[in-house]
Amino acid sequence: MDAIREQVRKVIVGQDEVVDHLLLTLLVGGHCLITGMPGTAKTLLVRTLAVALGLTFKRIQFTPDLMPTDVTGTDIIEED
Image (cartoon, rainbow, N blue to C red; front, side, top):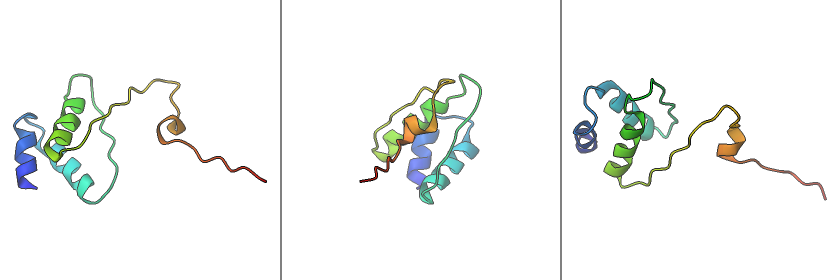
């Protein structure tokens, strides 16, 4: 885990606490909502972490009309 942390910190400077919290969230299998002003490297952080872990990176641009089910999908129960 230290190697991943150091690889991310080569790109993301001055956000050690955020990096640590994000890594902890991944370790425990949780979810994380990263918020902040534009230009604070939120997308770069997640993209860098994905590369460090060998994962794919996908980004969703939220809009006012985006619903949670647009992201997660829904289950439709049909009665026979």
